[in-house]
Image 1: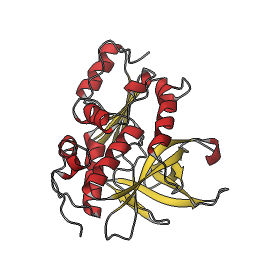
Image 2 (image 1 turned 90 degrees about the vertical axis):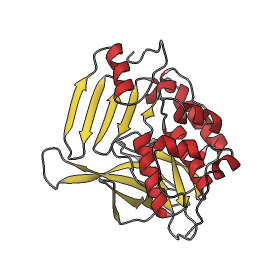
Image 3 (image 1 turned 180 degrees about the vertical axis):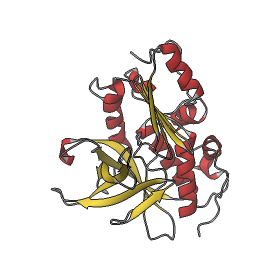
Image 4 (image 1 turned 120 degrees about the vertical axis):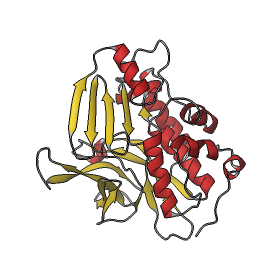
Length: 289
């Protein structure tokens, strides 16, 4: 068992650990073990919303620790994958975990993995004394996202806070094994039927800060990026997943019930961000285009 980490650890490495744990509502142990990793991961998913307001204004958000703290910890804002997973990585390192930053190809809806660029960030996390590394990811803005980290193991179905995931290997040209995270999607209106759907593919090659600065700039400013074209925000609670994709508001309940409706105007969009997602949009910003 790793030693308990005191509240000063975050400040020793230049990270506001106390502020982070308050933001996500974590009051549990500060140990670098599997139980704390699961708890912090789930609390982060439920505590900080996913949003692309910076990219919608064709601005790549800063990934510097102080800027992440100012935006995601000290204001009513969220972020997208590079912000969320950089923040989680800093917190986990402050708690004593080993963290390797990975890149992934989002493969939802793709017939060929190689047709998608590596534009997603995920984390490989190691706890002292635990022989199993874990895939952690609090920045995948989709209903198929992990709610808790899962061991890096193939052929096992994981139930993470009500969702179902598994990891598989797929053939590809390259010296490293290709992993794919799959989520189980039940068919609407059926009982016990569904299919495994690939979410993203990755290898265990480590990527560094300059790599993510380039990828972040591309996704945050490229006019062809989906995040620069329309509003995309989500919030996860204990019993639902709420998504505002452009003008379409979708709520998916834990029992699989899905409701959709159209958001009609800017005032309603701004109210929804404030009341349902916990986000204060910048003044004067056009949300719906």
